[in-house]
Amino acid sequence: MASKPAPQQVPVEEALPEKGMRAHAKRNHEKLRAAAGIVVAEQGADASLEEISRRAGLGSATLYRHYPTRIILLDIVFHDRVDALVAETTPLLTAADPGDALVGWLRTLVRHFTAHLGLAKFLAMAEGAKDLTSAHAQVREIGKKVLGRAQKAKAVNPDATLADLLRLVNAIVAAAEREPATVTRLLELAIAGVRA
Image (cartoon, rainbow, N blue to C red; front, side):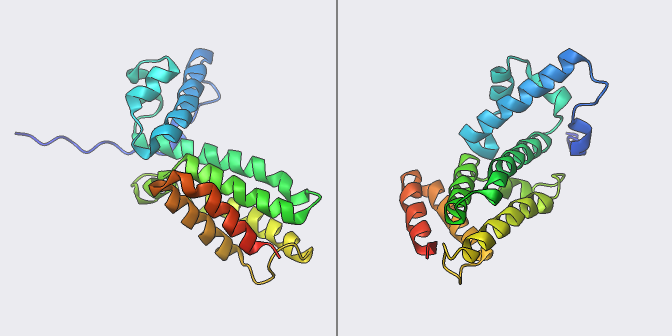
């Protein structure tokens, strides 16, 4: 019995819509991308590709034509989520109350990370996925600035570090995998501990 050839690795950039892509192909691409974001939020990294194509109102062949591998699709969903997170947290850099801005940053991180449990972990281990370093750097850079403003305003514990805050967020998200109902309580406890 002959063994199956290994699936061909396709760079993520090749799955992105081309400028010259026909209008209906571009619409299909965006429908799949939007449906993938929703289904991955519901089902995690093991999301059904058939369900994604069904929710987009397209056939699975169309999905594979636009996104030849699961990794490419999940990678794009992850980076879309990071872009949304950055867009949502950037205004916190100039918020009137630096302490409230830091709390908003923490709440937003927890909400985004719990909405896509395991996605970053899956991609970090997946061969062919884009490097996650630049995505993480964007999130850390905003956090560093928001924390700095809050500490300068004496609104948070002066000993708190960005690494501490990210560990707290990661611990809360890890707890959410086992007990989703604990997220709000744990987040409020963490916020109370960080506030000055």
